[in-house]
Amino acid sequence: MHAAVLYVEIHIGESRSLKDKRSVVRHILDTARHHFRVSAAEVDHQDLRQLAGLGFASVASQAGQASDVLDSVERFVWSHPEVEVSETRLHWLDAQN
Image (cartoon, rainbow, N blue to C red; front, side, top):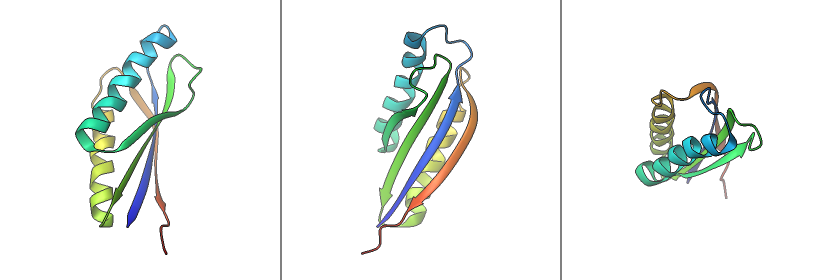
């Protein structure tokens, strides 16, 4: 079993309220969950109106599968013109028995 976590920090410059921010964040998270079959959540900066930390997790039988899925998720987030990606980090979780 191979498990990886992707952290993506985004800046939403046009957001004027937490409601504006939540709309953008909800769209990204819901679409990623549905399209890429990952676990996804806002994990940082919940109280800031223009900054969000998003977490995505993938588990697969092959490391390459998990890596490919999270690469696709990262490209998906980068493709949104309303957000600016300021940081990404990929972490592999040790799942040895």
